[in-house]
Length: 97
Image (cartoon, rainbow, N blue to C red; front, side, top):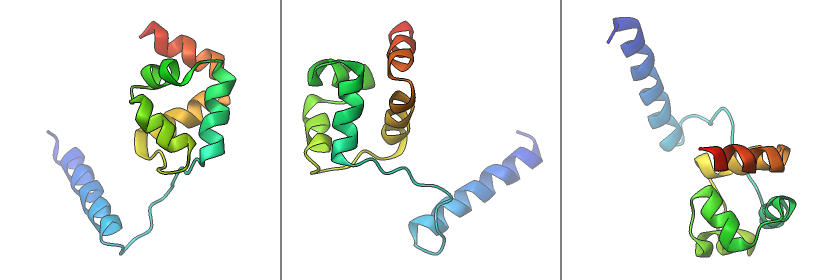
């Protein structure tokens, strides 16, 4: 690994540690509420079981999101945001993979 790349990776790890310790704010955060998750799923015209399978989570996890017991985070939140923008295109792209 080149030294420059290593230094960049090390800086990223230090930044992540500072965020976890509450010493620094994350640069961005995606928050999708319960009604948002349900609306996103409904725009795809998929049942809960089909949508859960599509995005790689359990039906129970999806139900927890839709009933506001939990909130999607990280990659799941980012994927939901993509699906929200172009639901049919996103579904088509995921099925292609």
